[in-house]
Every structure is written in C-alpha cells, then in structure tokens.
Picture 1 (cartoon, protein in one colour):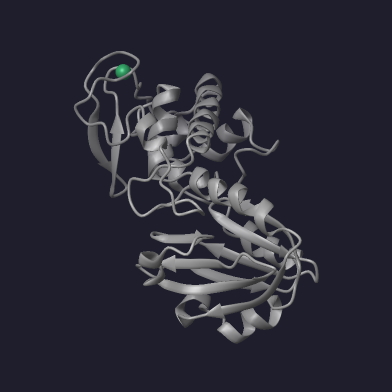
Picture 2 (spheres, protein in one colour):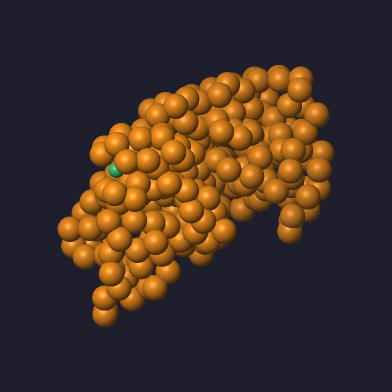
Length: 280
Ligand SMILES: [Zn+2]
C-alpha cells in the first residue's frame, strides 16, 4: 500500500504538470470510486475548475480548484494516479481526469479500494481529513513532545501506534518498521513506555525513514508505480523491512520477522530495545 513517501512522489511529479490547467471533467468509469458520493455529485463540484495546487495530507492527494472545489483521492491498496497512457494499466481504469490543455490523469486500481471524493470548499475538505488524520510528520506541529503526548498511557505496541493514521498521518507498514529500527526501539514496546529520549529518537527516525522513501521515489514492493508508471527504488534501501535473516546494517545480527497487529514486522532483536510499560 502506498504510504506518505509514495504519495508524495506522485504529488511532486504531477503538480508542476497540472497546475494552471482546467479540469474539464471527472469521468468515473467505476461508481465505486466515488462512494458514498455519486459520480454526478463529484463531477458537479469539480468539472470546469482550474487546478491551483495538488496537495498531500497523510496518504491522501488533494486537488485544489479555483472555484473552491477539492477532489480528495486515496490510493488505498493498489491505486495509481498515472500521467502515462500505460495500456496494461488501463485495464483497471476507474476514473479519468480530463485536463485542458492536458495531460489527462488516469486513476487505475486493480482491487478497487481507491476513492475520489469531492468537497465544495477547502474548509469542508479539511474537516473531512482532520477527522481522520493526526499530525502531519513534516509539519511544525510534529515534535518529540507531541509524540510523547500522543503515545501517553497507550498499551498498544509501538508498531500498532505508528500505523494509526489518526495519531501520526502517513506512516504504514514499511516506514513504521524503518522508523523503529532507526530509533533503536522494539516494535512490541508499549507506546505509552516512550520517554523523552525515546521520543526524540523515534521522531528523528520517522522523519529520516520518510525522507529516505521520498528521496528514492517510493518503494515498489507491490503495485506501487509513480505518476509516470515507473517503479521507485526505496525498497533497495530498506534497513530491515522484508530483510528477514539478513544482517542488521547497524549491528550485524540477523533481522527477524514477527507479526504485530496482523502485519509482518521486521526488526533487529539486538539493537532495537524493548521498553517496559510505565505508569502515566
Ligand atoms: Zn541491529
């Protein structure tokens, strides 16, 4: 599933290509794409607007239009937003954004969990997103102190805590593993066991892991492709994720795999410390 770095890669590729162009029409080929809205409702809000920005919030893409409308898209499991006319991908075409003078964008999605919803103004789109998403990692609001506060009193493992979009937005299974390894923290440590120094390390680990993902154009371990239909190379740079049995790049111990919250979780048993629960 695309996480913050993959979505940010798509956003940064597309924005310079589409800002200033008119969104002539949102053609919805699969009505599931706009649920619980209807394709006509989405078209009614978006069609004809001039694109002023393509923003990202967590794993969402937000297309801003000059008449105030916002098209909020989520790639979910297998969605891709492509500028290319990849014929193989068109088989799973769910929606096409017709732009004038171009280029058209294709939302393709084999498993059909991806969505596109429209809001009449920025405020209503922000309300929708803020109700679902916590602090944005690259914002000034994200600090070690905020991380400690968000985790305080929580018994859930750190890995599960990081997967929750309503705490820190944008982190998924890949970058949670990578962030915890960078921080030297065991994924099964209770979130509420974070102390000041741990939060400082985890905060830095999250930012470094996400930056590495962006730097290498995202990780293509599944269906992820960037806006041009190309694979990213961030998976070649993974420190522990998918590296079971390989040496930890920090200490050389064999990387282990376990399951946390139903997700495969990779960690170094030697240098990722398991914290003990503490009272609030
Ligand atoms: Zn290690």
